Structures are given as C-alpha cells and as structure tokens.
Length: 302
Image 1: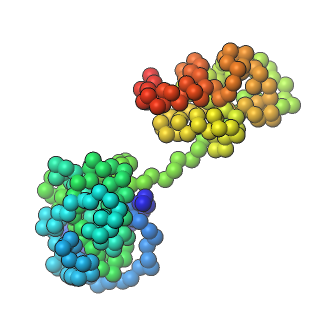
Image 2 (image 1 turned 180 degrees about the horizontal axis):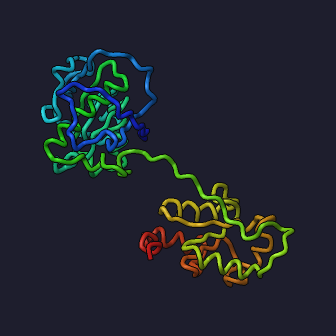
Image 3 (image 1 turned 30 degrees about the vertical axis):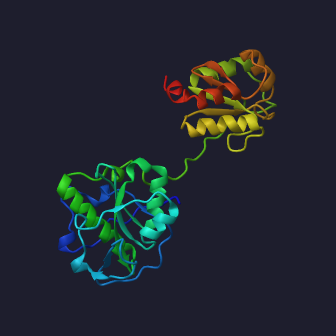
C-alpha cells in the first residue's frame, strides 16, 4: 500500500520537552507519510499516546503526554515478511514509527493513519532497509498530535546523532511516494499541414535528433500510444527514468509526411525508432533486449 505525502504546517506548538534543536528548522522538516486522509481536527489539551508492545493487543494501554516513551525506550519489533504477519504483529492505528536496517541503524521516522500498512509498504519497496521497527500509537490523533509525536522522536535522534535519518533528508524519494511527473507534450515538426516549409523535412528531422539527447518516434502520443511496440518503448523509457522527447509519426496535421521521410533518413522501415545522441539505436526489439540485459542505465548516461 503506497503512502501519501503530506506537508504539515511548521507552526506546531510543543511543550518544552519537545522543543526542537536550534539547528533544526521546521522549514527543513522532511515530508511525512500518511496512508489516508485526515479526519476532522479535534482540539486536544494534551497528546494521548500509547507506546506499542507487540506482546499486548492494541488499545490496551493509554499514557498521557507527560509519560510518552522516548525513541530509545520504545520496544524494537522485528518486521515480519508477509502482510498477514505484519498486520498481526503491528497496530493498524495512527501513530509514529521508526524503521531500522539490519545493522540497527535508523533509516526513517514516519507517521501514518495505519502503521502496519505503512511499514508493509516500506517492506515491499525497500526490504533491505526494513529489519525492525519501533512503534508509538497516538490515541484520538489530530494533525497536531501526530506531528508532536513525530517531532519528539525526531528531536531525540537529532540530539543523539546530529543529523536526521537518511529517509527523512530533504529530496529523499525512497520512503515517500512522490507525485507523478507531468508528461511532456509530443513534439511537432511543422506549424501545420497547410503551412509551406522553408527547409526540407529531412533537415528538420536531423536538427531534432541532433539537438535532443533521446528522441522516440512512435505511433500515437506518449500518453496514448497507438501500437503495442510503441507502448512497450514508452514503458521502458519511463521505467528507466529517461528524459526523452517523443514525436507522433501518425500526426498528419503537424507531422505530415514524416513516416516516409524518416524511413529514408534512418534507413529503418518500421516504427518506433529511438535516437540517442543523434544516432539511431533501433526499434522495440533492440531496446527491449538492452533493457532485459540491464544495459540501458549506463547507455543513456553516456
């Protein structure tokens, strides 16, 4: 289950025991991960908190804010390998959690509306970093209560180590789901079918592939490919994180005559066609073979 990222307001009032280090600015606080939308906020005079113990059932112990367990005092629980075991061993309630790797190094501190689901999502995406977890369940949580609990653990770790956990560092994309990137529009070689070109179409193709590192000539658009081979090529480029340009060879309005002209230019009879650094790499079969052999990551970095 993927987690959603929500930027919490930095204007959170905490008690003196939860005061952050002067070097730790709320503006630099990492993104926090949640599994569902917040419930309507409830004004609470203090934070109710349950230190989780895997040997007892959830909701069996509620402790007030003055008796919150510190991160170091919380029980370390081995992360099970299956969803059923995670659900049975970890609470499905709201709270704060800290994930440790096999060397007992803290990797990430998060908050969630469903702790078990969040931990299992991390286990699926980065299993090598999820060996054990510490959990604190926040009773009757609102946004401020969850933030306060998270900051208390984060403050403790920063005081002990002088740095935030790797997964909470600004720009880290390992532990939180990033919003999908907006897809680029497809390029057009001409201003329109009825506009007289001042240069030959072949020269426009040459200029295009020379000025862009990766160009994919496909059937249809990148958001809606019109053949299986083009769809496969787009999927590979997207999965490899390649920054590429795409051109729809079926667009008769803005790319009129492109299909036949490109075949002559590249001496390649079929589509899609992928160019890298101005040179034709090939079509779907060649790109698929390189992808399966793990050769593309280094290839596109050249």
